[in-house]
Amino acid sequence: MQSRGSLDSIYQTENVSKFKVVVLGDQGVGKSALVWKFVYNGFEDKYQPTIGIDFFTKTLYLNGIAVRLQIWDTAGQERFRCLIPSYLRDCHVILVCFDLTNCCSLDNVPGWIELGQQERQGRLKKPLIVLVGNKLDDTSRRQISYECANSVAELFQIPYVETSAMSGFNVELLFRKVAKDLYVEDLNRLRQNGDPDICEEDRENRKILRLSMEPKKFMQKTGSSACRCS
Ligand SMILES: Nc1nc2c(ncn2[C@@H]2O[C@H](COP(=O)(O)OP(=O)(O)O)[C@@H](O)[C@H]2O)c(=O)[nH]1
Ligand SMILES: [Mg+2]
Image (tube, rainbow, N blue to C red; front, side, top):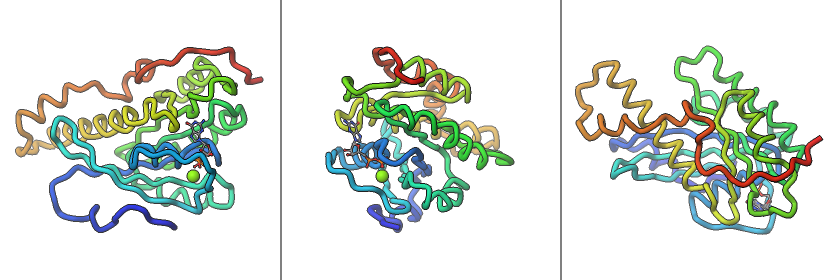
């Protein structure tokens, strides 16, 4: 396993909400590029397959409140598949990614979602699963329409978003929405448990719309193109 983040910084005792994000999807769909764009605001054209699992961490500020995302970027190859369940076990979000220019990668999406759903079984706090169609910038090679991909998301009752790791379109927004949704969910849980430490500012934040409740409205919808999926 390669490690680009600092594990030490995660486990320090400061009062920061921490959430674990696991990124799944076929090899080459742009998982690492998405994570890299979000964490370092960079993009590499040259393809370097992920070996096993890669780890990143980034702290976001939501109205001044620090939320730390621990991001686990997986390899899409079959030979590394056995590593994934142990990372899914205690995660809060699963981003299932596919490549808008590659129909096969959408065909494999149900398998990735089901892998994530298996880990949800029996868990009190189920992870949020989001379907992510990447390489939106590559319009001339696009094969999958918004409607086609969204119908897959609707089938599994999960939100759908289109991104470009190359241009950065929707990337920051995706992670911010996810962080916000988790933070609000955590506050609600603490409140239900009667946590006296929740301040008024936090109560205000709970009014933020829940990502998982409005899959269709999730972020900017992009222009549709004729779907070339069979
Ligand atoms: N045009 C375009 N290419 C991308 C985008 N994201 C990733 N790529 C390219 O797709 C290839 C695979 O990306 P990578 O992140 O390594 O895929 P992974 O195997 O899913 O982690 C690389 O050559 C990237 O430069 C994108 O949004 N647009
Ligand atoms: Mg990768």
